[in-house]
Image (cartoon, rainbow, N blue to C red; front, side, top):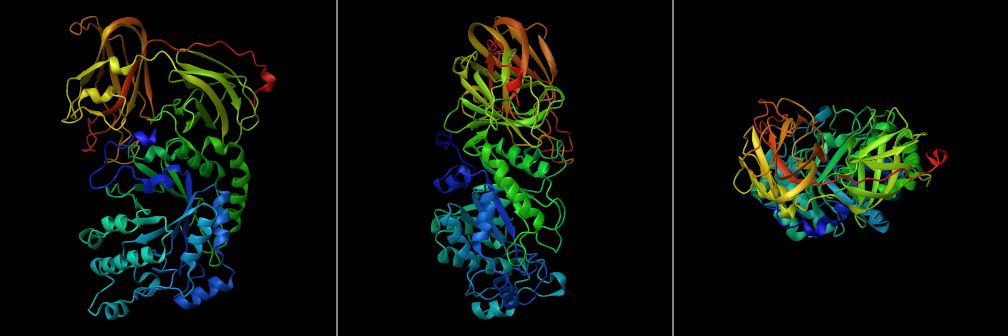
Length: 586
């Protein structure tokens, strides 16, 4: 599992490091946009602080609301370019609003007392320095402090000012969880800020917004939309695991990222669906709520938190302490299932035989069919009710029958297995390909390591051959493609680099292949893909990919194909109906 995934790293940073442990163990966080421009907006820093305190702000409120959401960390976005660049701590560095009361320190301490971490948002951007007709930055004060002229409204000058603030915060708060950074500033890069943070604050993590900056621990993906179904946020994620990734989205269905005086509704289906699908892809969910000046959330958000507290508790074991199913951690196949059903699967970190099926959109029928990925199922129950579920296996599919009474947001089935069967050991394959890039040869597609991958060198058609060493029964081909592209076309330059059209051949000698025994089109979807084959015995199997999904407008991904792992199944798991009465189904 995770402890074995430290063999490679992105340039200039650690793919894994002990400082990341709390984020890797987390399911979600609470994003807090709050500052001088929180309605009713203030232009006086002291007046804002006075109203915050007079309104009854307490850090415990935010921590308790985060716990209702079952979040493990908080991100405080107050030093934000659109919120007045306020610093909610007593700073010795002039340049923007700084409070006398140590709101940040209080929050860090309150969060720590209840097992949560606090991360501080840091902006790189001075362009909003006069937003709303008020000058939020004090270049003269900072220049006096630095004993030379510094213009904070320039990127260079603001970069220096914010650089100083990073170090002040690290010195003041040894329990700080890290920094959530809104893009980059050249001053930071030229002064090696990130390397210094890792050295001075070994427990601090670095997250970057919308850029996969290699030195950062995590990339956050902000408010991605356009996918179908709309809640399946990971369709917009383009960074392959085990890279730490986060989705960042608003809980209020409309309105600003910060409190603007309104109280928009929270879409329960969309919000819970995003949380669940992220957990089903090992992506952290950073949920943004809009605190008022006194810290209290508007009524609709507070009501949702109360609802989430009760709703998530009975199924939390299926969302926390798990990894996404169908990816490098194994598990059942996620995504589109039968009769319009859609959802994700998760697998326990501590018990790889324990799986969960999250049905967010139920099927139109009383039957659910999920690809079993070779797992031998021994029991299925409804996690909320404990009711046993009738099931059978065959043809590579786990079929649950007699289902009714679907939960409106997430019906969760607990699936107990005793491991996988019918998989030909990939260590017995000899792999070859008609094209590969240097360092990413065909052998990487069946080496048991999801950190390595075969790359086709943008060559299509392309062949990937499996030499089995002896004649074996073959029934299906399983493929985990590299999850380094979105799974739908977000734009002309952001498209899916996944297999579209394919053919499969077999040969007794690896020289004479004859006609394809199977051909078709794979969906552009995240997670494991399967190609079922006519029952055959052979010593060589060839997968020929004739096209992928990315159009020529996406020059980065056009014709690109990367496969983390591929394997052959010699037989399907077969199990008859359990005989559980239909009356015990959900």
